[in-house]
Length: 491
Ligand code: FRU
Image (tube, rainbow, N blue to C red):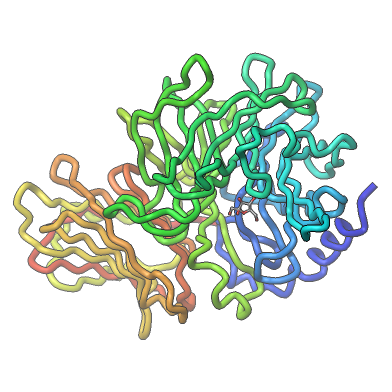
């Protein structure tokens, strides 16, 4: 039985998708059919395909009562839109179906685990309680479990907050199920709680996995917890972070810890890193493919820069391109899912090209491509600055600048056409490897994702430039030598 609210959202979506012109959408990044999206949810392989759900408010381009939108793919490039999976249509989730994850049950059904937000009123007023619930389905239709919520606020230690308790990430290990849920501890800062179950329905609280102690932000949202090679990885998206040099910027951040799981199930940190140094990246979530690759996707927006200028658009928000994670030493590297190579068209190559002053290469232009520029910096650079300007036209451009004297990389979209007084540039340290800085860029109309040195550091941002502005230029103050490989994407 489909509820009235869910049917209404499905109908609305069907009737309104056409109002978004094709040219307002990226070519291969996930967006909503219509309206607003935020976090990726339920990213999982199910019956040989990858399913991705997302926080969804179809009725406007602002955040509103949260539904779960739904797409699937077999290659991370071509996505098929599926009907809205969940609406906030019960007494325990009427304030929203917040973020969560998914898993396949032994009987072949697909289980979604999410945060159900319930308004409760008493004589002191009303408050939104966050608890965890499940819905079970076949990859299209999902039925909420009659025993929801399956993890209630009564089950958590009394010191933990009842109103900030969300975003379960579920996994299976040797026939048992576990999930981590973001919480707020007595010091007001983030804490990660672990639960276990043998059937995904009856859960019990186990322990605290890790806590922020006010160092890595306040509330920890959207946790992910998995093994990569022989290491345990913990990802969290903290709110209200303080800046720390060029590693962490103030506001909503994403932090990845590399470490190990101790016998008592708590986590011991060994290394920490920023997940993305750009402007728009939040709430990443991963899945494991059947060929054993850990793939991550994130919301390519950030709360600090979203919710501005939305009303001029018909859709708001998109996902990053899915990225493969690999561990090198104690650092996690990210590179675009390798499936993208299937779509390569014409390849343009320049070997050891000299760039001196501003250079435009006639055959390198466009707003959709996978391009790698390898900058030969050497030990003593003979240039001070190297800059790539893209989505460039009469009025606009987005700049990627490498300052060779300071070993700093800067991404700057302040001239991309945005009209809001928000953060528009960010810089961070970028060191060469064997005298070279490798800059790989994925362009998809309204976004740039930069992968430096084979994904050692990444920087992502959306841009606002009209599609006609599609030139690319290269500039060096002094003289720089580069190799360029540009791949057209046939989509
Ligand atoms: C993160 C977040 C989650 C929450 C969801 C609500 O962006 O705040 O913690 O579940 O968005 O849409």
